[in-house]
Image (cartoon, rainbow, N blue to C red; front, side, top):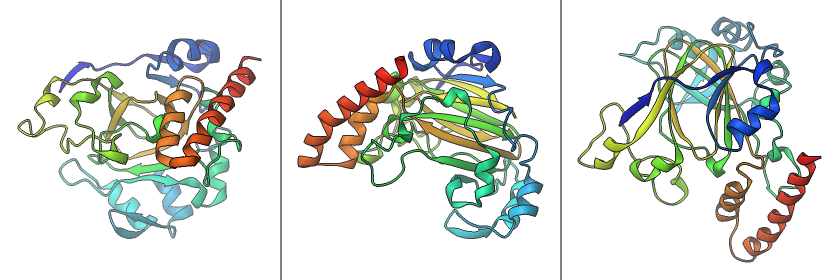
Length: 285
């Protein structure tokens, strides 16, 4: 794999603004790092490893097929090294944690709006918007190169520590060996640093961008962009997924393919097309 850049566009949210963000990044599906979008959060400056140890240390989480008291996991995370990384607690639904944590990260930053997934008009048996928590130590990695399920956008908000992200555009997909079926959004390449080029010869031609995410920054990963992360120092991150007019068509296709079959799929197609038209009109007013 070739790293074609070690930088990414970065803007202060106050200078960028919603209209320019939509025009220059969301609609053309371009990743960007925004500073200042989460300055209003109570979690800023409050959420540290010691905060979680003291306030939520008895909370039990499942990480790497093991039950952990959060205080014990935090101890491991703070002594993590690249040579011996601690287990990485990722994709923890904050809705299942004490309610005050969601208060600390509310409201979601303006850059995540509008988020059509929050509409009750989408016929899903479960919520489609996920606010998730990630806590990990130096050397830990997200387990797979992927793009987000159902072609949703990802907003990754860094609260503590540093991460290094790798991102590849959708046009690189054929070089990344997507898995089959419902796992088609995940790469089969199991080691990005030392890939088996006998099994994955085309991977050597893939071109990506590698960059850091610092505390107070929000990373926008557009729908269909492949990405993964490596933790550089003890890290706390919150994410939310989103859909708007830039990715509605891809979301609609995936939703119908994955959530339904037969007669339900035939009914959903015109309904979701009409719903998308309604969302478009609502956002343009």
